[in-house]
Amino acid sequence: MYRRKNTKLLFLSGIFILILLLLVFSNGFRNLFINIGKPVWNIKNSGTALVTNAQVLVRSKTDLLKENKNLNNKIQQLELEMRLEDVFKERAVELEKLLSIKSPNSVVSRVLSKPPYSPYDSFLLDKGSNDGVEPGDLVYSNGNFLIGSIKSVSTNTAKVELFSSPNRTMLVEIGNSISTEAEGYGGGNFIVKLPRELEIQVDNPVYYPNSNISIIGFVRAIESKPKDPFKLVYIKIPFNINEIKWVEIIK
Image 1: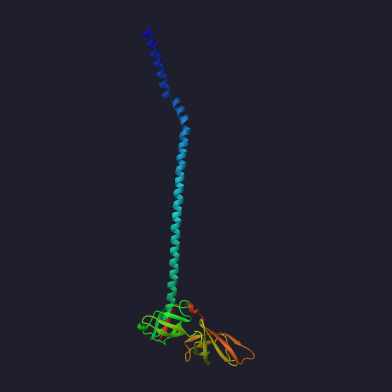
Image 2 (image 1 turned 120 degrees about the vertical axis):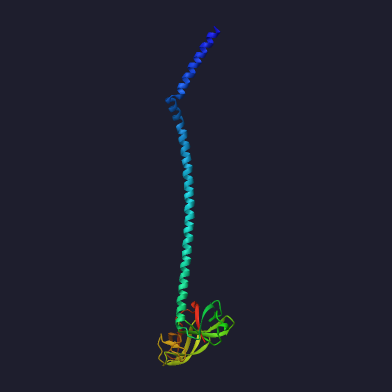
């Protein structure tokens, strides 16, 4: 009796295991298992894709910032090179002007300092006694414009005092016909006092005595009063003396 029960139990267990195996390996069960797990896998894949996209976005932004910085650096470098090129061209033009009028007894010199970094109406040049420069030598700028003379020299430098220095006087010729004395007024300006009957016009050139080449400046204004027997004539150099970079020293 006991043996029959065991046999029956074993038989039922075998049938149960067989049914279970059939369910496990059947398409329906597999589809059921896939359908149950699919949302979980989708969430996982979506999360992975989101993280990947975020990483790509961060990398892209970083790369753009880096590229933008490199471009800005290149632009600044190009702007600097363009400014330097303009400076070199400007200096070349100035030197060409000077060399075109350079006489055998002249020395081209660079201006080391000028107002406001040097005393009013004076320049410091980079040529001195070693270059043959001596006190009293005449100094020209912008072609034939006579602006001053050498006041003192050292071995490698020289100091220029401009003719327009306040209270400095010099003989001049206005329009090749009127010889008179001009007084420095500062900053490339002069003032002349003349009898009112003398004919003077604005823009008349003013020369260094006995020279039709050395120009001191031009008449810029004339001031006269009805009861005053004299009139004031204002003369000015036609450029800013503070922008002079090169000069020619005539020995």
